[in-house]
Amino acid sequence: MAALKHKEKINTSQILWLDLGEFDSLNTKKDPQGKWQDHGLGLLRTILHQNEIFTDIASTRSVSSWEELSPRLEGYKILLMNVRSYTFPIASGASRLFKQLNPNGLVIVGGMHATVALDEMEAVETFDKICKGAGENIIIDLVSNPELFPRIIDGQGAKSLAEWPMIDRSLWPQPSNRRASRRMDWPMEPACGWGPGPAATIITSRVCPWQCSFCNESSFIPKMGRRPVDMVIDELNYLDDKYGIGSVVIHDSMFFQNPKWLEEWLEKYPKRANKLWPYWAAGRADTVRQWPELFEALVLETNWNTVSIGFESGSDRILKVLNKECTEEDNLFTIDLVNRLGDKMKSQGRKPVSFWTNIIVGVPGETREDAFKTMRMVKQIKRGKPSIAYYAPYPGSILGYQLIAESKSLMTKDNYHRDPGVEKVKGVDYPFYRELLAGKYDHEIQPGKPKLRSFLEAIGL
Amino acid sequence: MSSFSNYHRLYLFSLKNGKKKLAYGENPQDALDILSYRLSDAEMAEIEREDFMMIKQRDLQDYIHLLG
Image (cartoon, rainbow over all chains, first blue to last red; front, side, top):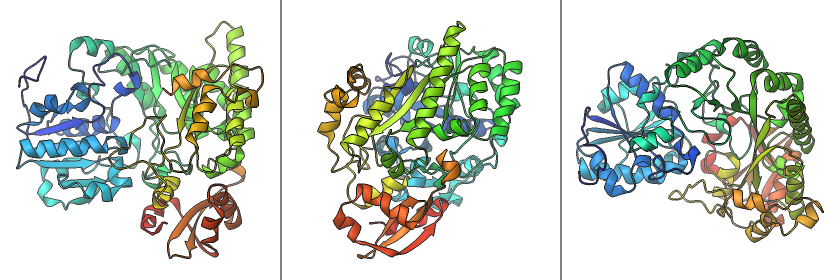
């Protein structure tokens, strides 16, 4: 107990949820995105509590070490964890520690990694029950009577997001001290540069139906009906009344899809929301090009202030390897449109819309000229920040599975990190990319334009 | 507007060593062309170009153990 700094640990339940992430990341000032909360954990814990199955919560993100985590795991019968690929190593470690402290305890795990890399989950002996797929319609039975289930369980999800209860955000883990809680606006989330805090992260749809070969999430997440517009606005108004909202992050994998829903959002959000909060949401270059009037209206009339587009590459060759099903032309159309909209808003005295763009470099097969074309495309963006990362062959994606099978992946099950600047694939000329991002080839990209050094700093190289 | 006009399909090609290789494309030849962007000539020569099947992304998990 000596390791607990701020409060005595009191077990109120025999069931413990363990939130997973980097040690101490909820407590520190830096890395606001590392403080984002786990909607899966929030949803499942809300369902349990609404059915009077009460759980305690601990987080690897609110402690600084295994030693500090240890007393928080002691004295429970069940440990629950939602495991993603990048939290798989820490989940494995936590399950072993839990078993040492509670030899008769049961570890129940689920989450994305159970679906995309079941073999790796099965190999962890301290995972007693492994739930593949969605868990919202099985969690109550599973936690109430785990002995009735086999080790590997097929989860059961809802058919529509409309069936999900509103997440009780006070069930999310909090930092270890009040100062850090205030700083991150708990139980809301901190501003991360996309708009003022407190930030409300919400989900209106699940699963992007496109088939990008670096993601392929629709291969392992069943499609679900989108949440009704009124329900989304009601939740935002409720959160605003209770905690206050500065900005909204719509965490859908793909917000700009389903024009009928978007048209209803366009009509109702400006009228019914307590305030026209600026929001971050994701689209695709080809959908923007397909429905430019709808896109423009959403930006101008609903305060879609940060447009996240995964341009990925400025080269058609690499867009094909990634099966992005967008073209160089689609990307340049979207950049031009957002630049012009930003200029128009600025001339009206409004804060101009900006981009949050995902760029992937180091894709197998990428030539130097492909990479130069990508950097030329990035330089066309007038407002916004490119998020540049080396391609990562995650299991679950078609290209990831294929590279793993070809023994070309440098990622291992003990190291599914998200560090954007770490080498991840054999045969990729990483020294070239480091030099490219340092500005060595600026004369080849676009003579006379600003250097790319800022990108290098942005990705920590 | 490529996903609206040039929809890609997922192909599973047989390899000479008995394994399989996944590739997207508008048609099998396009999928092979895209594979050639990242594979060496020796790796491409291992592909049985006429021995392929089209699979659905939803069924991907059923084929992972066959990949090489």
